[in-house]
Image (tube, rainbow, N blue to C red; front, side, top):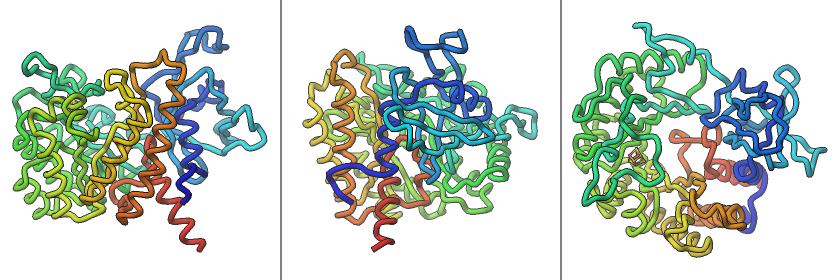
Length: 417
Ligand code: SF4
């Protein structure tokens, strides 16, 4: 593909991710039958608010006619809005181009979310969720990096707001210091897996969880989890290990027992300096070099195309790192080159920097950074012959990333030649 500009569905997705969607009654009505957004829509001052409440529930994910999945960000200033209704169909419309609406649907509210496990527990709280055709299993979300400081420094990743072990995780029976996952939690998880796979097509299972300060213990917990998932996966849906980086012998055990078919250990950022600042817990308890070495061990076991690292694209633009977008993009592209050279595929999710919002060019520099990265990244991955394996993720489940959309576009172009 051209390396000068995004086009087609990756371009539409980038537009909607950055510009957001303005509230309309159609969007509000869609919330009644759609997977709910984590963030309610907040009306800005002076914006017409038909709810009278200042905020409204909205759906989480849009699906376009070609199955591109896009996260919805509410924005009263956006030119994008939703029209139509459930019966006649919804349309995404841009005020600057009303003649060319995009037919859309929303990720539905699945029936299993209202069901109960065999012991009468709400299935929605069983630690299993879906987006598109991906099932995410997170039955021990509490992260030990939240629990202590080292030399006065907090160990949690700076961007993370979801890993605190607290009352939100108590219903999963997770207790600090306990490595194993309670049997009752695993049973409820199995009930949820069975219900979900009966209701909707799942093509990928992703095992994630909070970190333990001892990577060997973390490995033990994920071995237990992966074995139970394997025993409850009659259709052999590909499973990805989304733990932190693990010791080599533990990886070998995952491989020998064929518990997972891909791994994704999230380095989050490129460069040792940024890693230490953004992910102090990972840096302290595992270490930057050890993290990359673990990913390399995984490549030697599972092979190229089966080893990933999620990255938070845009955190480099937080003001304390003192980089202009061009410098930040150069740094990230260096990381792409290095990781791809090792057979590791980084996956970039858009991150909205918390600081610097007072800069008038806040949006434009973030967008320039993200587009520059996406285009250069595509060229580098092509050069190394690395495509995202469709057992790991695909365009039907990637709602904040462009890799799968770009690969699909590339495949279509090659098919036409
Ligand atoms: S490892 Fe980092 S991102 Fe993951 S849960 Fe812990 S603090 Fe959050």
